[in-house]
Length: 222
Image 1 (cartoon, rainbow, N blue to C red):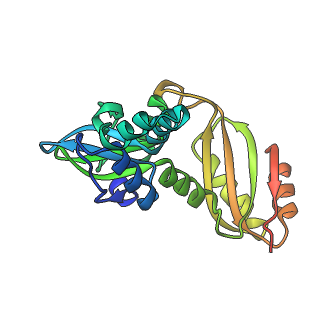
Image 2 (image 1 turned 45 degrees about the horizontal axis):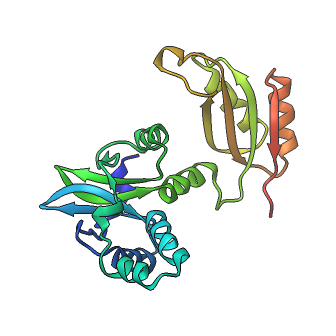
């Protein structure tokens, strides 16, 4: 899955000289959490709704008319923006996007293509991606297998067992435990299995009979 297919395209772009009060209004009306700051065609920073609200809170807390006037008429985006923000390339994968977000501890990433800002990717899109994987909007049943070492044929064996139990297999995901590098790819992984079935217990019993330990089993709600 490629970032450009999941990003918010053509985001509103602010300049560093935009008044912070105006940026706050734009962020609120667009219902977004961050916007890129671009000057002379180059990405200079990122202005966030949280940053705007913190600055506004400081001004409001003083109840000083001069402070409020200064905030409304003088403070600019460049004064509080996040400089040199982490970015992602439009042709990067969503998996890499998740890694970058986690490494930098951010949920808003400008998307770049040829040096230009072409989109924004946020925690909302990342959450939506995870929800699609887990079938949040579908009536799926599922089981999670205890960590196992995946060998050639293991996934096929799980598939055969689930389908032999009368279920319609929809997805199967091996999930690493914690942070793993390439050298630990063969380590034990949990396996999440999603399917349609009239009776999840039948699938669970079939997997347990084949020697798999079940961590959890969820029957779809109708």
